[in-house]
Image 1 (spheres, one colour):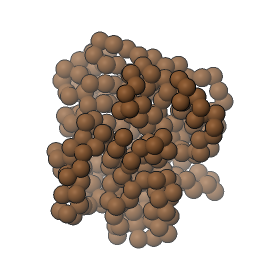
Image 2 (cartoon, helix red, strand yellow):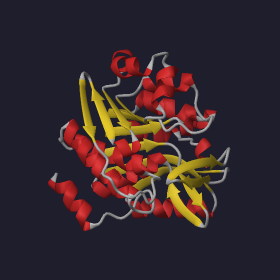
Image 3 (cartoon, helix red, strand yellow):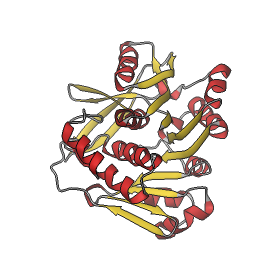
Image 4 (cartoon, helix red, strand yellow):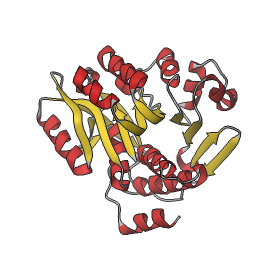
Length: 291
């Protein structure tokens, strides 16, 4: 599987802890850990965190050929956990607001074929990165366009959501984001789940519901995967691991139902560990291979 992602690369700061994050890189980190070939398009500052980001991407097995340097500082998100649920505040502007590619970079990217192109709303909060994303969406050759909504604070608009949906084949969001996305296209929640696939190129909707598990809507079919009753240690990145595993198994020939079950299993594992991309132990690797 060959995956390309565009968007925020940042460091989550919680107390004295610094952890590399950002949904696009988190998803790629898990896909790479599962065996995929991954590339990130983003920007970091000419600073220590930028250097550490590049080193960490290498360790994760994520290609950083399109991770550029910016005059702005590397992105930082201050994370506060309340009851295991994270809330965020961001540096604004920062490097990932300044994602720019040369014509040569665009040519290289457009010459490749990808299984999936991954993107979201957060990295489109400023014009420079937003323009780069839409140029990519109009020209990238990919089988799936995976829109991880990832609504944060005020950094999105109804118009942006609608424009991104025009390119989306797989839509992923959580249950809190669902009503806001539905409102953006002028539909009640229940109608949205039924009709969005007629209004946009969306073929699958991946919905995460915390302790209630996850659901995938495909046409008239609904697939469900419950969450295990485990103690949550750190929920940061759990949804990203679910996205990664769902895409990995789906693109490697598994059914939607099986892909969702495996994705939920990995998300449960991540919730029970510290960090968005914890090392996989032998038990989770065995479970994923047997299911």
